[in-house]
Amino acid sequence: MTAHPFRVWAPLASSVDVVTGVRRYPMQADQGGWFSGTVQGVTTGDDYAFSLDGGAALPDPRSLHQPHGVHGPSRIVDHTSFSWTDAAWRGSPLADATIYELHVGTFTPSGTFDGVAGRLPFLRDLGVTAIELMPVAAFPGARGWGYDGVDLWAVHDAYGGPEGLRRLVDAAHATGIAVVLDVVYNHLGPDGNHLGSFGPYFTDRYRTPWGDALNLDGPDSDEVRAFIVENALMWLRDYHLDGIRLDAVHAVLDTSAVHVVEEISARVRTLEAELGRTLWVIAESDLNDPRVVRPVELGGYGSDAQWSDDFHHALHAVLTGERFGYYVDFGTVADLAAALSRVFVFDGRHSVYRRRRHGRPATGLSGHRFVGYAQNHDQVGNRPAGERSASLLSPGLLRVAAALVFTSPFVPLLFAGEEWGASTPFLYFTDHQDPRVAAAVPQGRRQEFASFGWPAASVPDPQDEATFRRSRLDWSEVDREPHASLLAWYRSLIRLRTSQPALRDGEVPLVRTEYDETRPWLVVRRGPVGLACTMSALPARIPIGPGARRRLLLASSQPPPDLAGDLLRLAGESVVIWTEGD
Image (tube, helix red, strand yellow):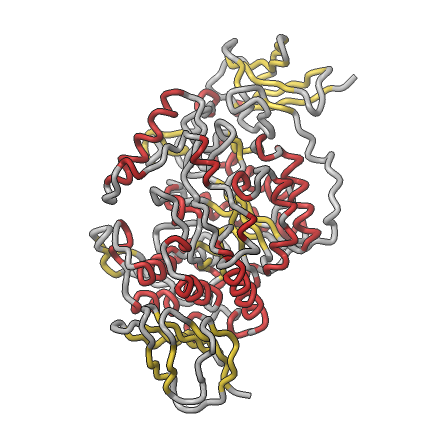
């Protein structure tokens, strides 16, 4: 007869039962608030729940699958049942990566992991070496961004559940592509969040924009920290993922001597040694604090890299001319040059947006500690109409933006569809089942954008399924103009980065820039590789120095400019890249 062991941390309960169908099985109270028990007659694929003190059946806090939704029973999953074929996979250095961020639900018509797997040959041919999945932990309803997940150990059923994720990772590794997962430990969503019924997972000592913070440093917090840290390791170990991207670590409130991000990084390093393959920890931080990526022995958290919003904001503001919200702090070519040569534009400088000084210098850190991009899910989706850069910039400036990303000292990231200038927006969409939450989300979204000066009528209803459908990529565009030529440009840039060692060295202090604010134009030098670009529609005469022997690598305008003299004549909204010497 089959049997399955169950275990749950429920220090707030006097008794806990395992519920399978209509039957209840009492569990034994163990030390530290844990309860355990083995139930006969249940096995992989069966559903179960926990009842606290005789109350309603609740999903397991460490549920691996919620096929009936976030309020329904959990399903038993066997992590050892999948037949992996990636035994020879050892990962790859983050320094050599080209990352491709995607949302599973909108990437293909099927909106599944298998749909993503079907596009892996396209990504390989593009030059992508790693895909980054937006969160797949179970969240309410069928559609959403995933940042309101409530069952952090469970794989979203609508995407294909645990088996679908394993098939995708296995296929990606067979294609030579790593897989990174975005995980959210700074908050949980409001709909289906049952953790507080089991134990002191939350604290009212801190507040986040989403409510009470996770209890990471208060009384009884040890098991809460273990819940988070072990979750991070589970994705890497049991799903063979190559890395995690920690969402908004500035909102992970922890005053412990060892910050939970540091603890995660240290445990991942140990797991990396055990598994014998490369693992990445990438953070998102709004603090401009280099401690996030400094090694632990130098007082840092030990993350491998963090997203570089200053680079994005500087690039976006100078190309689009937008100055609302946090873009008020940016908009000059000097800011873009600073981001390329110092990483943080705000490294102790006063921020108008924040009305205070912000950040500190990223001295001594490699560019490989930072991920650079012209677009990502936040910067596109957190606009009322979800406009991509292709809706905001000319074809010429799209090529300028891409060239600056792929010749930067940072690890490049592109957002799905960016490479062909997708015409479809990426909007904010939800499928909350709780009527109160469903009503509050559109209202809150409109109030948020009102502070940026956008009228409420311009904000689509996130709960409307049409908002989700509009966000699906249209793959029929790829072979049509103007999309096909932009895709060819991206492929050329990725190949160029791969072929030129100077573009992959991460040596931020060696980046040299010259610029003119009035034209405006920018020149960037990385060893023997030079780039010159113009941001206005007018042609520019750009001094590039006396007659070194120059060889053209790429040019966005045809015919390409003459590189022979010390004065470069460059067409408006265009970019040229060359190498010097023999």
